[in-house]
Image (tube, rainbow, N blue to C red; front, side, top):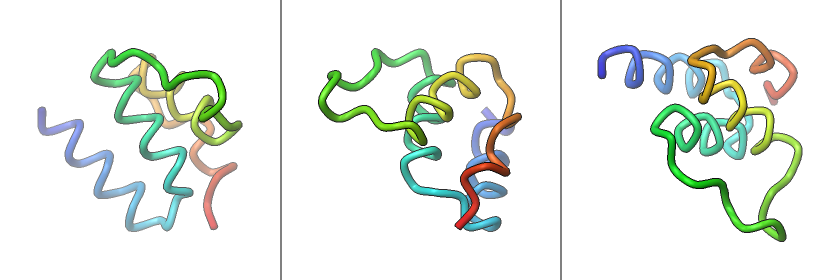
Amino acid sequence: MSKYYDTITELEKNQTNREYIVGWMGGYLQNPAREEQRINEAYEAGYEDGGNGTTDSASNWVS
């Protein structure tokens, strides 16, 4: 689980969009995605990256 916490800490330190982080957490933990009306681009990108165990598109979501 160290990778999980280290990644979240790094994303927060870089001021990454909160929706991306929430999506990343859900994808990494293999949680079901949000219902359709609550999904946005940042969440989808984070969810996909988290599911793949990467942060490839995180730089697109830095505030």
